[in-house]
Length: 136
Ligand code: ATP
Image (cartoon, rainbow, N blue to C red; front, side, top):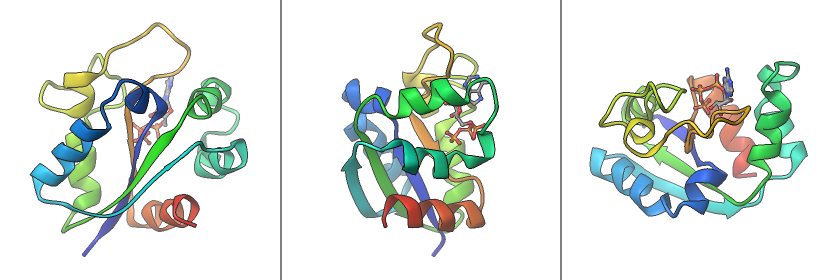
């Protein structure tokens, strides 16, 4: 079956939403086949977010993502990459549709980066690359 990398970002962990996010993944019918909590260092984050290097939100994003523990999840199921991105909702939590993780649980905090609770890989290539980084 297809695999994806899901992250509960530091805002989600700090707000105690890890269980709720895992519940939604499992309730949708995806299998959780890997689970790890870690405080990501800047080297891991630079590799993970290489495509965003140089963008205005890059430094705030790395600062935010290194501000506390993250929960990394390997999830499996047919079309799980697309399915989890649908569960997560759009990047901006204020605009994200109700019913989604970001739409139900997230909001804007007026900061320089979207603290939007979760990450999900966006393609099979990204998933393979990101799973190798976070489950090394
Ligand atoms: P993710 O990849 O985390 O699932 P995404 O695909 O919706 O989210 P990307 O475009 O890959 O978003 O951006 C990665 C992360 O960088 C976002 O989740 C968000 O935290 C932050 N980010 C992206 N765009 C902006 C922006 N314009 N302003 C502030 N933060 C941003």
